[in-house]
Length: 346
Image (cartoon, rainbow, N blue to C red; front, side, top):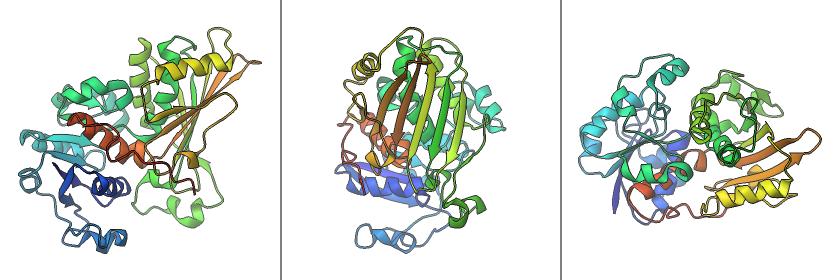
């Protein structure tokens, strides 16, 4: 059995991870850390776990959460992870981090977008960006995974085949992305109150969203050149889901079927990436509560532009499910274990 601790277990991403871990046949949950609810039973905070998982939430004590586990998941806020993870690494356990603290190759990029110095830049050299479909072999050899965010996973996978095959102009890529409210986390905020969200949709952090830098980092590696792009996120009045619509000018004349065939070949062995046939496009309820990423493609022949629509569940493939997929890779077990479930359409 893989013995596990979860730090930050009562946020939305953390509790989804706990739910998936309970279902994983090779996992034993040892410690759940929540400073906000330490001392309470998990079922007191989330009654859906009643008669499912009888465990008491703990305060963070690195010594306690490390002495009997193989891996720790850190579902902590940005900035908090980089203070705790070096201590976890010193204990010799594997770590999968949900924050942005260990997703970057270059500390100066992190410092530019997060506005603070990185306290353990030496660990950036050891961490691996945990987008399983792109970095599987490196993930298998590391002890520290920077688990990608939801917007980034959805957008990178939508554009990777086009850049790898040099099919698009790299200078004018546009990503229009939309997220459900859980993407902002569980913390109370006026913007996320029901009356502020329902019957409303809005753009936010235009040209300044931190995930822009992650997308550019990974797409630059694929393209073999420096990629800068326009990324605009929106808040949708739904609980969960990410839908990205990506626009790029084609380098040559292609029919939609030709591009779809390129995508299907690129993701031929990727169980969790589903490429749609011509004439069909994905929707958020096609992937809800699952680890799938769905991709549809249209060519605007009038403008010689490709439009790629991709979607995923922000709490699963965009967070907890991807973390579990990374764990499976780290321990050399079938990647689908514990996350091979169909989406919940209704």
